[in-house]
Length: 257
Image 1 (cartoon, rainbow, N blue to C red):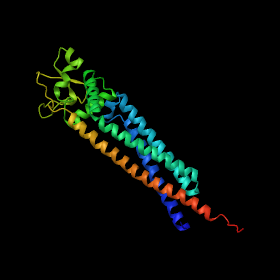
Image 2 (image 1 turned 60 degrees about the horizontal axis):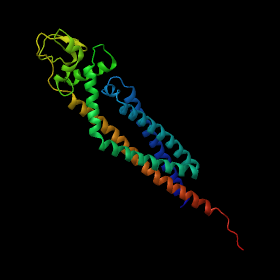
Image 3 (image 1 turned 180 degrees about the vertical axis):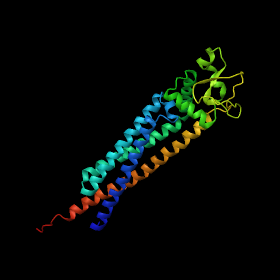
Image 4 (image 1 turned 90 degrees about the vertical axis):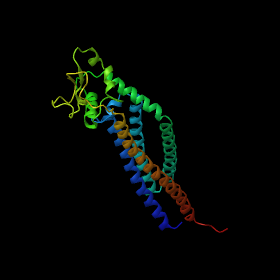
């Protein structure tokens, strides 16, 4: 291969590694958002060990991708064959791990859905109305999505505060403004005049699942983009590694016997 083609491959690989580095930043940032955000539904799921482990895996994969992007840039610019070989091997392992993780999530989605339902049921049963981060999040979900409970309003019947109270209480964030003219609080419990609560009848499961699917699409899109960059990086790195070797052989002086 001529020096012009070698230089082109080198700078293409450098460009792809910059993109790969940025994708790593995006994955790590998404993992940190899931772990630290206090205003989305993920706060409710933070009691799940699986969710926390998934967040840490995203952060680790993002950080490792950033490192590999840096290594790939060094190998490409300085034409270091050992770095290019290491880069190719690590990209191959990352790609295999991504495929395995995607298959695991796909085949275990029913288990994940059941776990999410159990987590939400635990939150509703133990909701004390003291305005904690988790309660603020669930109140926000019910208020903005105009829903009540997970499946329907009856999910709140097992709440300990409502069951043990001598008053007719209902969650304030469930209030349906069209059924009550009184302007009540946005959190905690409110008193109802009758057993027929002025709340939304629809549960939040469909809206929340739609939110999760929307964000899952973002994650899958990022992962597919990273996989595409990884394949290009693998192809360019192995070609560059071989061509560097070929170039070195052409520079060896020939001796006539």
